[in-house]
Image (spheres, rainbow, N blue to C red):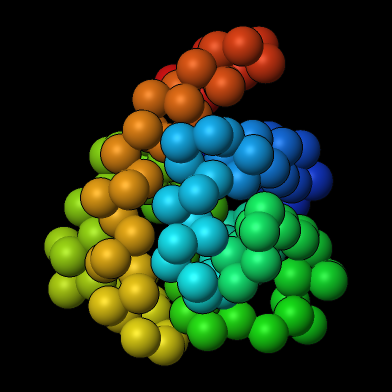
Length: 137
């Protein structure tokens, strides 16, 4: 069974979480230090997020505005794999090798940011629990 039942559900859960990350006093500055922009395209169901960390604080856009925005790096994966990523359960190199994750743009930008995201995994689990979505854990 799919983690998310609709695009609306993805936006209701992921958008506030990403906004929390960009305003986090530890994680937010790490995004800004990366000085890049990422578009994340989810499929099954569809969703699109743009994280613009070329400004301080970083700005999150979702939906149609994210699709049309400029991004230096674009990632495409299923919504289930996106959920696994934020839980800390998706190994990026293996996902790339198995073509579960497609990256357009400088891969080094993504790999440079991954270590900084370690605290985000626990934060996602706490966010799900705090928002009454323990069913997704």
